[in-house]
Image (cartoon, rainbow over all chains, first blue to last red; front, side, top):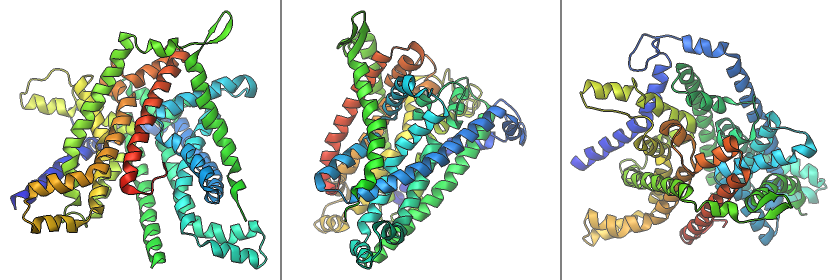
Length: 268
Length: 274
């Protein structure tokens, strides 16, 4: 009985430790007083100031555009890659998969720095300076592996004879792929897309190194402001970002568990 | 009917954006531009052995180790409790542990800034209780606290997942044979959960060593870890050769240890790709 109570208390303490800072942050985003030791009354003024700030709205635009574009492009390239990798011979597959894991395992800071080197180095030829476009390329690069890793398991579950049957019945390979394979792996593709989108919104380190002066996304903006100290406007911004990620996460989680239960039923 | 060519765009992309940057990093690490053009040199890597930089490296490893140990001590019981009979059916609890992992790193760190700053909540509470306190923010302790806060879920989840997959009959058998809880824990649960512990240690230690955000925001400007050093070399000093050399060494160390950890993991899990 005592052990049970101790367990419960321990869990509660840990949960308080994990969630209290975030709750405090959210609560203080509604605080009238700028000093955080005191409660000066409920206000929405930080949110209003947030929406008036043109720099923030530009950062928001960059964040969303890059998240959408990089997720779409990474999903297309990644899904095609997964279909290809699935058909590869053992050795070749192992090499490609190890390379795919490299950006996943590599510290973010090293990936960011090496991409920065590439973009600066290639500027002489391509005339593309560090900025929106390079940040987009970087995001696509770190998103593709996650799409591949969410599509591959679906391909493994796929019955390959269905595709062959479609070919025997006279479908062209492309038509069979479109009508037979893609619909079957669609849940995996969609999960990969959402994962890529979330990761892109969430990224700071790689964006930090691959963007140029003047172009920032939300996390870079938060970082440059937080470096100067605490600011209630960041609290408001953080609250909005927190809620967005939370909602996205719940959707992804629901999808993944649904995918898994479907897969289990398929096995029965 | 092989569809391998579908992966060609990806292979090209990977060559340009993963392989080439890696070669560039290698190139910058081992060359220097002199009057005679670009020459091969080991100077940048050797410079890391300079006491100043060695200290930075040691401090990063030291803080990351402390953070890993705290996470293990605090996190292991959490995994045990979450995986125990009373709670194992409760998926929501596990999800509650995942959510903080997905909240932006910066926001989580920033949240502690608001708590620890002068006039912040913790400060006010301490003052109210008449506990003498000087500086909370911009200290070693604040950096370790930020790391533990950020990385604790990375320790809990791998251990939790190993514990839930464990065959419960072994524990029951041990209990039938007269083992008490401590013996079961020491002889069965802990040895069987080692793969989870190892991946937990990897997942906490690696990001803790390379972070530059936590040390910058909670440690203040003067606080330098390896991550800050790399950032400074690229963004402030502009010494790309040295910056690349540090990144390269860091990457090699981390990938090798990851490789070893994964090998160890594979013996238990079977299906890993490495």
